[in-house]
View 1 (cartoon, one colour):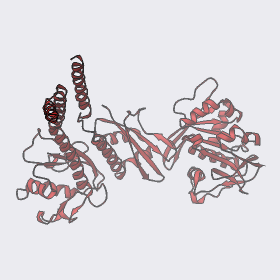
View 2: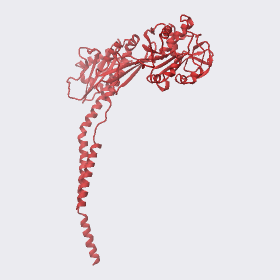
View 3: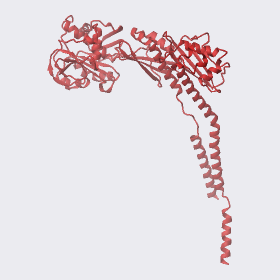
View 4: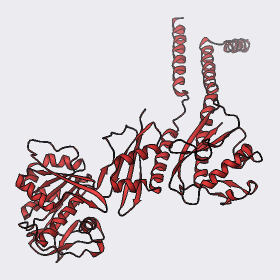
Length: 188
Length: 346
């Protein structure tokens, strides 16, 4: 009899443990709210952070291309006197740091405007991703074009002002002693 | 029931605090990448290199053409930045000397020593502009390079103004004989001198290949129209002094024990300089021996100028955030050409 009454009491106690208290409900609510909040904040910031990262990447790439064009001679170093098909890498340097070769700059412009080579082939040789574009300009200190009538040596056929872009301006010296600005704009 | 309500209320407050703190910790603001300042540094370094390689810097430093230099450098930099140019390692274009408490007789004597205040050094125009200053009632004028003393007692008298001047990068020049008391006192500290026992003797350059002696010898050679390698002059009319010789000596007695001209740099850990110059027989400046030391004093004054001057066309103060780039120029003398750039809108 005693044993039976103990079992009944135990069952009753066990049943009471199943009752959810208001504190528990609130704490679960607070936990879920906090986690949801954090998740929402992160998710809503992802596009912004991605945009920032892409902008930073653009700046770094623009700087790298400016370095390559101004300080590298290209390969072969006489690429400007051969065919486009023979050129493996493009660079304006005449061999001495900060000195740029006017012939290489002119040839760069010629290749880019050549209907048999064109912008896309140049972009490919420069190793620019399909999702990006590049504009390379050569400008005299008085603001006029170094080669031809346009300051741009090579630019995409369709210009967009809406896409994110970053410009790096570098200075080079011609064999004549004239200083020129080489402006590299990378467009995402 | 009241206790239960209090716990619920407590839980709500805690949840508000937690969420509020999360907004602080999860405010996802990307850190500044620094590309803005990096691109400015890149373009200023490019500008220096390009201006050096096409000869702009040497040409305008040589002719002291500040306006053209500023115009050309300005064309190389973006329009939204301002800049300041400084040249280090060669004598200043204008050496402003304040002769402390000097009478008109002393100023005349100073003019006789200098024997011309406008001259050329390696083709560069140099101008020494002496003027007297009553330091008891006046402050040192802005732009003064050297405080010149004929009277050693004034060194102690004006020590406060003098030390402030040195802290600001100025130089102190004393032309006087010294005794043991002077050397072991305040003057010994500022000129960094030690005593070795007085004597008068012939003196020569400490060395033409190292330390301050090299620079003074180089300037001396140039203003006497000779090459540094040809300088083997002996100076014969220095007064009796007992300042000990060491590596900061410019002119040393032939026995190698005493200095007759001694330079001190980085005085009291500043960029200031101090020169003690032994007095000498100055009764006749047309005398060849006196004239040789006159020219030596002029050359020492060129070193005391601080060898650092601005090539700005107007006085400029850099913005709080600025960058300095420099390039070593190898011309007739090698020197440092320094440019400080800052954004106008910050």
